[in-house]
Length: 234
Image (cartoon, rainbow, N blue to C red; front, side, top):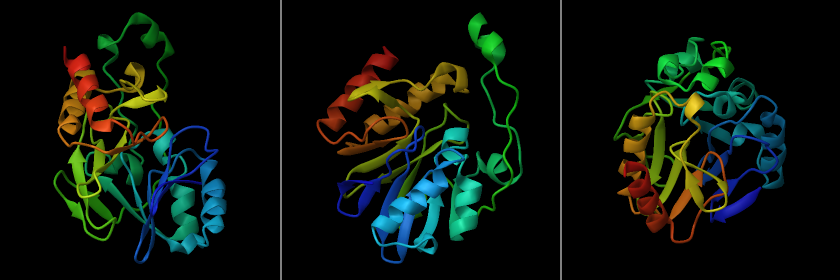
């Protein structure tokens, strides 16, 4: 694990789909769950911090894509953690609904050829359905839910205003350090809506950006996001 701030860590070696751990009064809260083989690595790394699997109390999901919920069912079973997810993503997590994809008629021809069959996951029970503006009081001194649809219909981000920390899921990515980019088009349901979500989070004055793909950014962060938002909306 790597420490980002006091009480905030990110896991290492998960290959794809970054997961974050927040130390709370009652134990740990995770943001996202990575892929199917991630749970064993997550449990091993929290042990290095002195925690047991049952110390993971909550798992917050930004959106229900395989690199964010692939490990969720196993991780929840091992830990007994409560799963928090938006109303727009609940059916994929709990009811085995297929993951929504972009309209193939609006995709470039090559993406139509590469389009995967509809994917479903075995159900994981949801403890709390989240909505825009909700505050998760027990996490990080109050973690605010910010609706950020586009990449997925029910995509949400988590914002801690005092610490100015944003867990943004796949609102944007940084596969090359500090170089923000749009989420991948072929797995983004509505790119125009995704760009609007980037503009929304650009107004938050973020100090630490915790991405779903890419290393966390903690330097000149607000200006980087604002510049990127201006670029994609131009």
